Image (cartoon, rainbow, N blue to C red; front, side, top):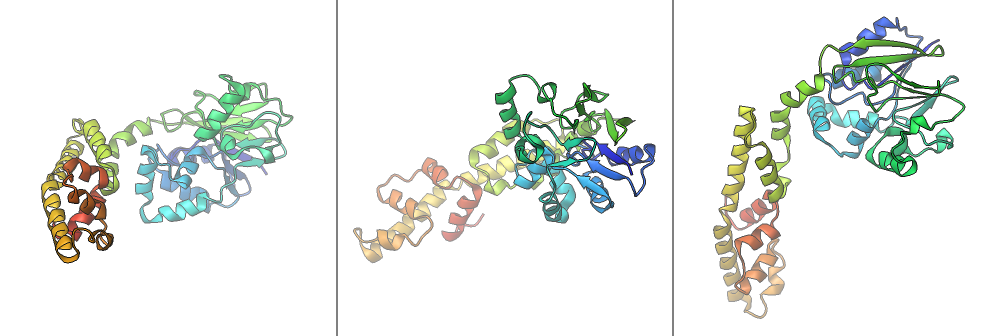
Amino acid sequence: MRTIVVGDIHGCYTELLQLGAKVEITDEDCLISLGDIVDRGADSVKVYNFLKNRPNTIVLMGNHERKHLRQTLSYSQEIVKLQFGAHYPEFLEWVSNLPYYYETDAAILVHAAVENGIPIEKQREEVLCGCNAGEKYLEKQYGSTYWSQLYTGAKPVIFGHRVVGDNPLIIEQKAYGIDTGACHGGRLTALILPSFEIVQVQSPQDYWKEEIVKWQLPVMMAKPWSSYKWDKIQAICDEFRNSPNVELSAFIMEKEQWMHNLLALAPKIIFKVEERLAELISTYGADDFKKPARCFSYATLLYKANVSNLTSEFLQQTLPTPDKWLQVMTELGIYF
């Protein structure tokens, strides 16, 4: 039985199938992905389904899987979340059970790195998977020297994570870097154990460059705009208002106008708050209205109005998101 170790796939489903055909993989062969099976390429869902359903297959935790698991989503993860749709929670559940390393008789397999001199079972997860915390930790340990240059373990380590060029990085038969940039128009690489034979297939294009443009509008439309703070909404609008993507630009200008229309209702909100304050004072008196005012979500606004200091600026500070703004509007009987 052979073990077929594959570098960062990043959604390159066609290349994964081509690589399997080139190595003449059989059901008896163990297929091991070093992680980062999703993001950047065009077919993350297909790669996931293939690896999940293929028998005799192991997938390691990569930093991109961990980003999904921890919900620290950047643009490429937002795209994949949309691609999975209703099946995204199922994907997260599967990711939560991925191992951080695997060891064969011939080699130790990790996504990103190992710390020299520490048994594999005692390595830090953040180092093994290459998340930001792990990268910073290794930088403190080794400075600018990459860990693979210093590795002296008895058993070779096979890793991915960092694109090393068109061909694998081999350091004294001790460390084998096999992320060769498939999603960027490079190659998808397999290393066959125990022979350490290298097999590659070429990607025909830079998938990530295409995905960046293709998914801009869907990702923007899916953002939780109502839960963003006003300054964040403005920052996004400033960044993308003049996008060459006409549809994206139009959507952004629509969102910016939506925000301005909401904020323009500040005088009406202030008037309604002052009106409610007058009702409370009339009912309970100027000295005793504060206690019954607490039952309102906008009690802070009532107290501010009582000292004649309720301003539009204070409203934006106290109601920092459209959600909170709209909630108070609804409670005051103002409809947008």
